[in-house]
Image (tube, rainbow, N blue to C red; front, side):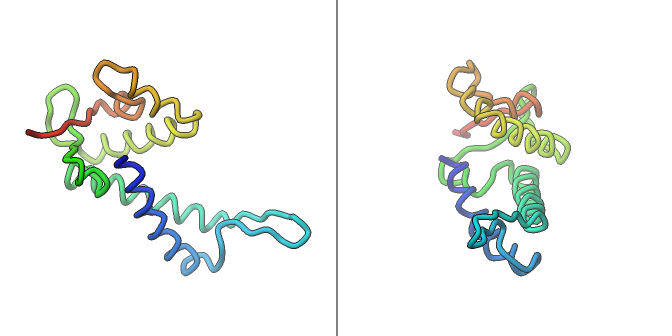
Length: 130
């Protein structure tokens, strides 16, 4: 659920900023049915996502979508704060988890520690402080 909230926030941000930065829509279709992709707008969106997630995970240990659910990301081994390198690893792992048919996210339902692939790659776990 937290990821959905983050996706909504990022959708609003990238929809507002991408045309300003790249000068057009992300994907367009002509009357002849030809689809054109604005790679600059897509790259800007990916960069915004990277800064958003890595920044919040490093700064607060949680993204804005995690706040209503009182969830935090901590190191799996020691329970300490996540640094920039772990946040970057987690972001790359999240992309891998999504690209491969969301299997890395589905994995959470079957894992004993409720870790997705992105958690395992970065050595993190999500917890709810008491």
